[in-house]
Image 1 (tube, helix red, strand yellow):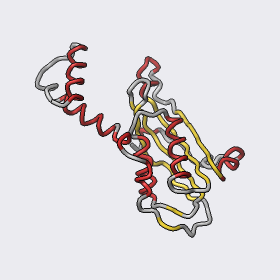
Image 2 (image 1 turned 90 degrees about the vertical axis):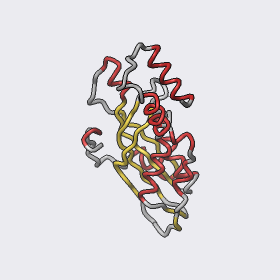
Image 3 (image 1 turned 120 degrees about the vertical axis):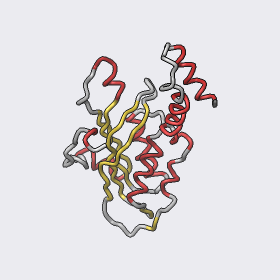
Image 4 (image 1 turned 30 degrees about the vertical axis):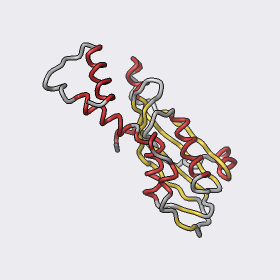
Amino acid sequence: MNPVEKCVLELMQRLDMPQNEQTAQTPMRVAALWQNLLSGHRRDPKEAFKNRMPSNQSGLICVTRLPYHSICPHHLTPSFGYVHIAYDPGDWIVGFGDLQELVSICSNRLILQEDLAQMIAQSLMEDLGAQGAFCQIEGQHFCMILQNHQNIESRVITQKALGTLAQRTASTPLFSNIQFQPCSESL
């Protein structure tokens, strides 16, 4: 049994959870799940740009509704939803799948939603060399749902704009035409 599995078993014992055939493999399953949920801590966002290509693009590149999930560092509960990204390319562009990879690397960790938006936009600027970057996240947070609020309709929306897009988004939201849907409908 690895150290994480031992911690899960101890937690179960301290919470007087039943020990039976249904829970016999729980420490192993929980340890594997958490290693996956927090896998972004072991990765650098730059990895998402390893297949970058020279840019001859002169317009804005936008990708919407990229699914994400992360873990609240205050309560160790999940949040999930969608990330919307726009960037004004510099010398490089990446495939759309690489942007999903960036979201996964940045979100699979203990991170506040507002810090996640900052991390994604900053990586586009610093690691890809974008002239401008924008990230908007629409998320549902289990810490809000489970703490007697039981408000499953609440959404938290955060945004971060940098570079050439910082001025533009101050006066015109880039994604104002998106019809936000409940996160659970498509996930």
